[in-house]
Image 1 (cartoon, helix red, strand yellow):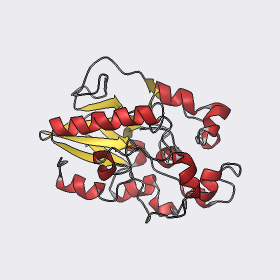
Image 2: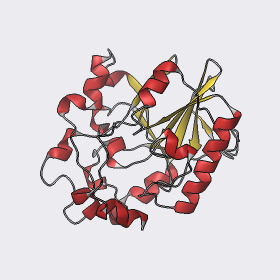
Image 3: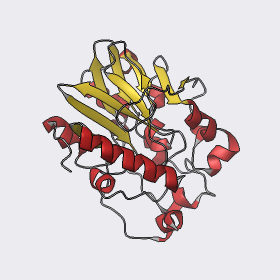
Image 4: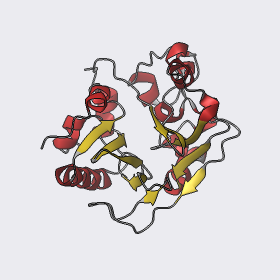
Length: 251
């Protein structure tokens, strides 16, 4: 009933952020997710036959909110981004891809496989809206444990930026770990919608696999108990402040 409730329950949240995260790394600028596009306000952008898109979300993104314009305001040119890491391929995480045709787009192989074609659309992926030039680098995780996570993928030569599988919300969802000043910055995507939901071990309504999501939440909780961690989900209103303050999870 989780998915049904996302359609039938009319108790809306307050407006939630859709965060993208820019990392100014010595090896090149890294962007985690690209947010949504203002085109969602155009009639017909979402498929008419999908009740979730028609009834369960209220997009309000304006052109000035798009990731390319937000980066420019920070003094970062979109063409200077070296890597774009996609935690998963839902529209609110890849809607700004059009700004980055020259970047190396990174996504897990499993996520790319399940998100394509008609079957992907039935799962909620808007693959018909993807840029025609999209040819991402598909990564396979290696048997290199990080804490409770049995696999990982190291992105940087310095070894300070790693990707870890956090399946559940989608079949190929990943999160990004950045090691800095003795702390882990845990960019969680939609592994949980907020830090509190992770601490309470609550599975979100649209998780594709409830068992995998619960296992992921357990692993995240174990990780933040073992390592000083700043936990940063993509839709948590408090995430930006926690990042600014380097505020670690208190369990």
